Image 1 (cartoon, rainbow, N blue to C red):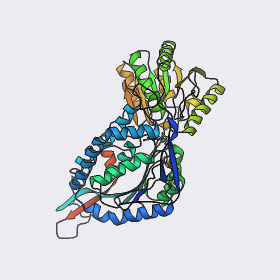
Image 2 (cartoon, rainbow, N blue to C red):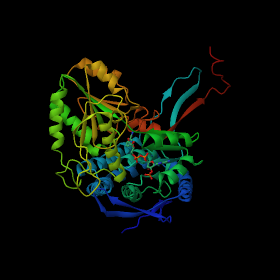
Image 3 (cartoon, rainbow, N blue to C red):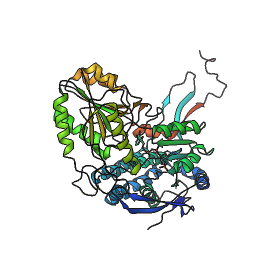
Image 4 (cartoon, rainbow, N blue to C red):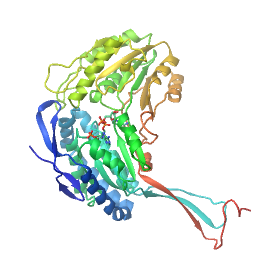
Length: 486
Ligand code: NDP
């Protein structure tokens, strides 16, 4: 079995304790032995990042962009290998794994160009002979903590904008996907990211991750993961800047005037893609009562055709869940749903297969207060709620604590625009599923899905840079704002 290391100050080093990880489609296959990084390793990584900061932040941003363009090129060359590795490490089907790597390529290309922008603005002054502008400055050492469900894309969404802005980084990936993180860092190293600029510490979130969060020399934390972990991080981070991208309980509204085939495609893709393990997964379907029966019947037919298996097999629709705990969680929620009185329309069991599989599951006759309609299950379990009209659909949509993604299928333009206005979510799709973020648009949620930050595109630049306001007075005399105005 191959043993992997931490990456600190440009060196691959050991920590001491190690842990192993298995292929969720075939738990007998161990994917590697990884370092269980500890607080001391985090201290070393932060020190390396701190020492590298001055030099990296002084590299002209277009030159930093050239390094990122090289990252994009290397990712492209390795796309198929990285995608296969991702499927083996966390289970998603290969076509989606390729999409995950493509997202990292896209962000690297976008941010490479950003090296020639990083715009501030100029404006007028209320005084004569005075010039006003803003510029962007790096923040310093930033700590990046990521989940396992997009093990290349989410780290790239953080590391790459952080680098173009001139920050140095300590990256703590999920313990479920350490190998994808290592491969990504190897590519950054090969592309010419100088030593100390990116440091990687694998290891438990509760120890290594929390130490990074509390570290006095870390100026910002960018976290994607579970709502409760995010809340804890916010409490522990002190005065540093914290960006949180958390969970969701995303809904699709299907009105009686919708194109049902299109809506079915959207529910299958949003509800069961990535085995339901996306923060933007469509885990609630809110259907107009006039079409409920027909839609339910068609949906069950479609679900029953979905093929489970190893994500490496291109004919497979649904891969395994990431680990045994996730499988048990889906099982637990099926029991909760039954106890709550929802109707199990299909699925609901652990199939007799090697690996952490779970049958794609549909509950119908759900009501908004049921736990299966409120909690993020993060598995292939979808709850269907029927409503009498558009107003009730919006009420149901907003009846949860989360506010990440949302969707409506309708051919009524008024309802489409009203939904854009009324749905409480960071993202709303019209006649498309809840998933499918593009890297140049803001990504993030409201309510318990985050703390107001957004990633992607220009908002990624905002997350990883400080704005400095600059006044240049060339009058040669003391001029007092608000006082010496004529
Ligand atoms: P977790 O919150 O369990 O873990 C996320 C990361 O945080 C991991 O690297 C984990 O390390 C680390 N961590 C855990 N505990 C702590 C702690 N006390 N201090 C610091 N770091 C810690 O989430 P999952 O990995 O299970 O990811 C699934 C969740 O992520 C879902 O809720 C999903 O909705 C959300 N998500 C949100 C997205 C968004 O953009 N809004 C996108 C994708 C996922 P370790 O693995 O070692 O425990």
